[in-house]
Image (cartoon, rainbow, N blue to C red):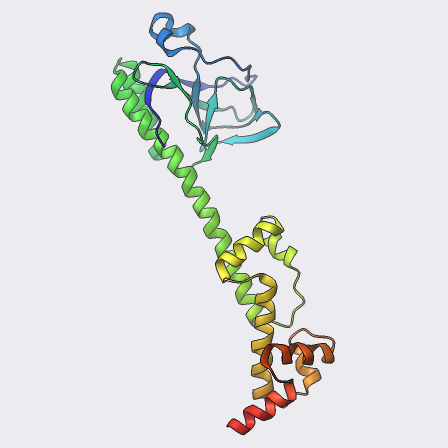
Length: 278
């Protein structure tokens, strides 16, 4: 993703007072070419907002996000935000006001940038923020821009990593579901329950399951039942009705019909034919 050039306007560290709250109305993007002339009156078009401590909330549109150490947001100048905090746990925030620009310092608005990321470890991000702050305070515009780019790339790539981690988490849940089905094929499973365990919609679960297992969850259950039924038929003296119960069928006639469709033989004939082969 191309971010263009980066222009850092201001870096602020705020230890919020107990009665602190923040309300920002949307504004039109302010031309970056005027930034040097008006300095502190320049209204930022982007703000990397990093929570170093405390507890609070921020609202944008219909969404509300909790705030705690490790939360980082990319706030836009043309959007409205309202933030507040717990007076007993006041927020500590570092805000970097900046712009994406082209070579002529015209404003750019890169698409697809994440809004929020939570870092479980903030040491690296804090070290980058410290470098940005030092460079900006000493008037080293190019150096502050370099470190800001590194910080933004960390923000973007970490968002991708959390997406990958979530996918990996879902894969682990689906793997456990597959193990459970194979171990207990006779249980009466509800696919919607699997979806809830995977924290996604039924439609999305079915897509993920097929991607992981190569078949639908329903077909996976039936295959596990068929393989288990074959094993029990050949390795035990259980009646066909008992085998049907063990693999989740309450109706022996339906089980026998289904078994014949899948194997070409009714269960009793399957048992006899395999015994003759031995």
